Image (cartoon, rainbow, N blue to C red):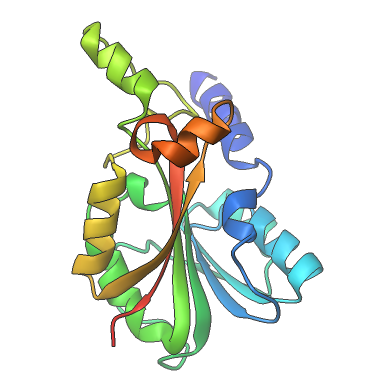
Amino acid sequence: MESSVRQKKEWALYDTPPNEDICSLVELNKKVLDIGCATGRIAEKLKKEKNCSVVGMEINEEMAKIAKKRCDQVVMTDAELLKHLDFPKGYFDILLFADVLEHCRNPGEILENLKKYLSDQGYILVSVPNVANWKIRLKLLLGKFDYRGGTILDEGHLRFFTLKSIEELIEKTGFEVLKVKTRNVLLQSLGRLWPALFAWGFVIKARKRK
C-alpha cells in the first residue's frame, strides 16, 4: 500500500505542465528528441504550437504509455545505458534535456553519446536547477541540506549544478554555449542581474563546437 501511494505522488510530480522556459527557445518546424520526456507534455506543446515532430525517450513504462499519445514516437530506454538509436546521425535539429541531467549519474556521457544524432546546424537545450540559489546558500549557512520533492533539492537529484559547472560540463562535451536564460519565480530583476545567486535555475542553448 505504501509503495502504491508513493508511486501516485511521484506520478503527480512528473505529470506537470511543460517547461515553458525551454519551450520558448524551440524554433518552428524542428525535429526534436526529448530525453526524459516523462508524460510528453513538452511534445504536446511543441507539436501544437510550433509544428515540431517530437521523439520522446523515457525509462518509466507508465509515463511512456501516456507520452506515446503526445509524441510522434517514444523510445523506451535508459539514456545512461543507450548505445544506439534507430535514427541516422545528424537526424535531429534539437536535443532537449529538460530537468534531466541532474537525475543522472554521468550526464557528460549522455551528452557525448547523443551528440552524433544532432545535425551540424542544430542545438541542445538544457535546463537544470541552481544549487547556488540564495535559499540553498542560506540553508547551508544554518546547517540544513534537506531533500524535498519537486525542489532544487529533490530526492531524485544525483548531481547538483551551478551556472559555472553546467556551462563547463556542456563545453567539455564538445558544445559551445550560445545563450543562458534564467529561471526564477519571485525575483526576476535580481535573477537577471545576479543569476548565480538569485536564479532558481537555468536554460542553456548550445551548439556543437565546430
